[in-house]
Length: 334
Image (cartoon, rainbow, N blue to C red; front, side):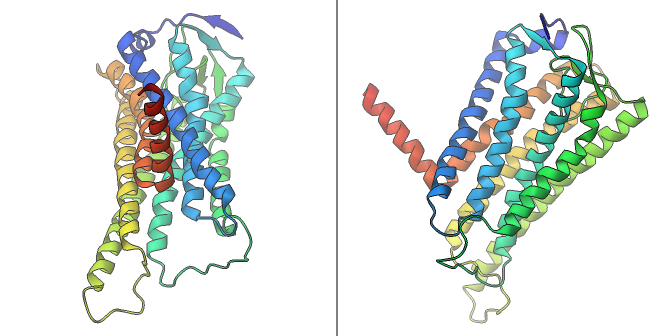
């Protein structure tokens, strides 16, 4: 492992005081915010005596995937922007490139899973069966979904463990994927057997981890809003269908739907900007490439940084924790 100064033009631009200050703020928000979600919501789950709330377990899983991406990738980018570049060996590049692809891909589907779970819950035609003396912990079906998300994305990340290599300070990336990195990080770059195989993997990544999740998020979130509207409308009519979805807490579910909608809009805007920028690099290489790659870096981080703030608005325990912290700060400096 060696330490050298970064020389690329994009790194000089992105490490200017203005860009670096913004990126530091985003990284700190991502690390602190998501760790707070894990700590507060996770502590409430551990205190549950019976069956835990599945929605809170999904929130912890999403926040965990956010935090891992922020720690393993975005924090490393921030450190390299301080002026010191770390160059890994070939074997370590195999490992880190695979981990980056795995965590980023799992992060996308963990985010979608929150929207899908809320839609499925609203479409349920029978109330949930809750037993006071049942098994403690999340449902087995939920654990299975988490296992599939993380294991299938690990399988998808196998090319990252194989088709990568270590470069030096003069290396430039010839292929970029939203699910991994938009610059040679720690000297690691893609090394596919041919240009066509690399573009094939980039195209499949664009379809599987970029286009498909966004479409599914829009469908499930729209379905949730229509279900809530239909149920609210049915309450004002005398003839209620026995097969109508059971939604017993309409105000709470509407708040949850608004929070999930806000998360989806935030994800789609940041993810979409990243997709456009990276694929412009892969397929066009026009005069705007340098600027778009900088935009891609900030878009890549914005969802991870701001999603805990959106969750805090809609989650009662997170709001209570933040109010407690703010009141203590005011009492100390007041």
